[in-house]
Length: 215
Image 1 (cartoon, helix red, strand yellow):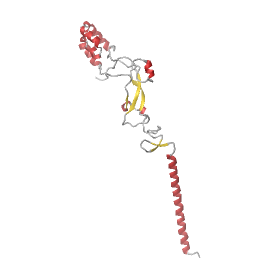
Image 2 (cartoon, rainbow, N blue to C red):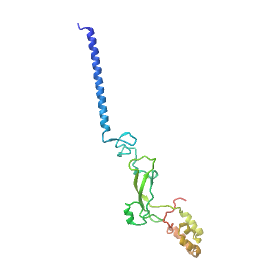
Image 3 (tube, one colour):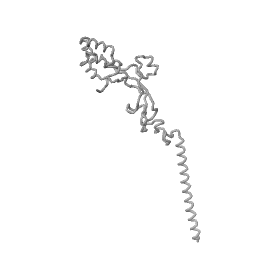
Image 4 (spheres, rainbow, N blue to C red):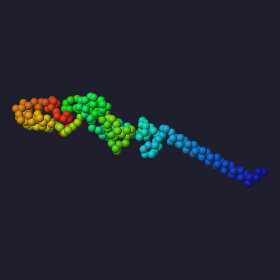
């Protein structure tokens, strides 16, 4: 008969062998996982972002932009989240306008004339997170400027004190305002003419600025 003690020894040896085998498999599995991780992190599709964290290039806000990124491209931000440099006034000089690469405005809108559009360098606000260059060229900026002239105020000056030239003083037409004052509104005729010119949009601020949008 097979000795009982030998049987026990064989069972113990078998158990130890099974344990060693499973341990080797787990070690091999861990080694494989580590190797796959190293391969993944050294892949050109993965990189570290500005915070030092690993991420896919498609999801990194300061790397290549992808459709799944939560960040908006900086040049797509609305006007509330950017600030733009002052538009250059080329005063109708097309040569100067083209030499600047189309930056600024060929001319500004004034009074009732049509609206012109230009472009300028804009910058994302410092507390706004976005993808891409934070400084970019924004096109389609309206070429308008405001210097504090209100249409209602000018109209009241023209109707009530136009014979003293107050409307033209207010709009910056100093020379003609003095002439209007000395002639008492051109004996009333100039006074009436200026009211008509103001209402029809032919009497505007001398500096070419637009009427303020709010009173």
